[in-house]
Image 1 (tube, helix red, strand yellow):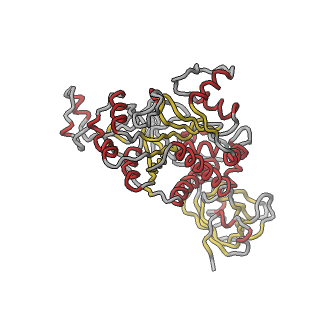
Image 2: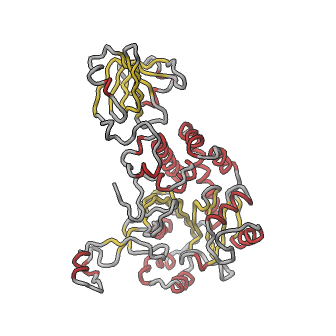
Image 3: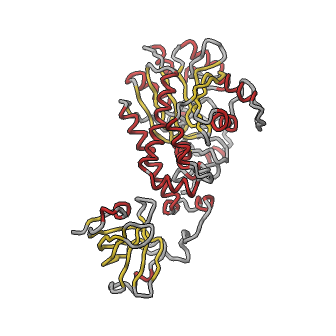
Length: 467
């Protein structure tokens, strides 16, 4: 009986002796003077390839097998045998090979040589076939699965919040507008003031920057919920840390206060990092050896898992930075939004472990964060990890109606537009809290990839919406 196997399964010694069918894309082919060929294929199920030995007696050996090149897709049938080759436990002795698709070696971009990550972004439709980006995809999948498992095991409900919204959660105004109005006509007729009565939603509408506000409505009815969806920021920033479209997981919990929020965030990170190490061992070893220049990636991840995260008030963090004697590009003083260089100093040099900063100045945080009694700070938190800086941001939410309305006025927000959000404070208000974890930031930290554009399948950045 012929069994269809993945390359990953066929590379396991338990597959030896099985009659199997393997399918994938050719990485290399080399011909022996003895009249047979060695073909390596990969199907994306694992980091490694499997070698197929193709005898010259095959009917299509001369006409097709000897013409196979990188990128061709094939089905190979035969017996899985113990391999005498170095670095591989198994190989297939094929009795038939079917070619599904050819790849012209003169035009196929992924020939057997190293390409820069920047160049591979031009071939985002083909880069998953490379070792690095196949590994990124598998680790990203593992992290996504771990996130769902973590929250489901703790009785959170998964809710789907809108992609299109009229609310600016962060109040920063960096949103992509959604409209059905004819922009060419508006420009041609030089219309200065838009009448949104003619637009699809009858009001200005945007791609969401966060599902938090809507998630709060469900938390205030169902207790513990989380969202996991794409979010969008129209920030014109062309750096290795910014994307215009990215994925966020955002838990919201009724009857939670800031310490509960910190504990949950720490547990989540330890879970997903631990799962990546245990479930993606081959890929993680690859990142440690081939991507991380210091070859300490596995050690850094394990250090996070084994550490008790430091809890540090923002004010104390500023004092530590000022007294450090370190020269920073951005001057440190109370009231500033700490930069990545400040965050990394705290995690990599001062404490040498993850740090959760909390109680930030209210002037640098959004309207929905709980105001402390000191009149100048809010119960915000940022989780910082070595090598990246901030990886999670969150807060206890302001559940007192009069305080919320005062904060909205200070930030020039139209209270009427948030009437439904204020209603949560009118009808059965409770302390509640939540945070946001950017999936791409987490994948970056786990893989050691230096540019956030290389941990999402199709990056959206200023001037780039290709594919």
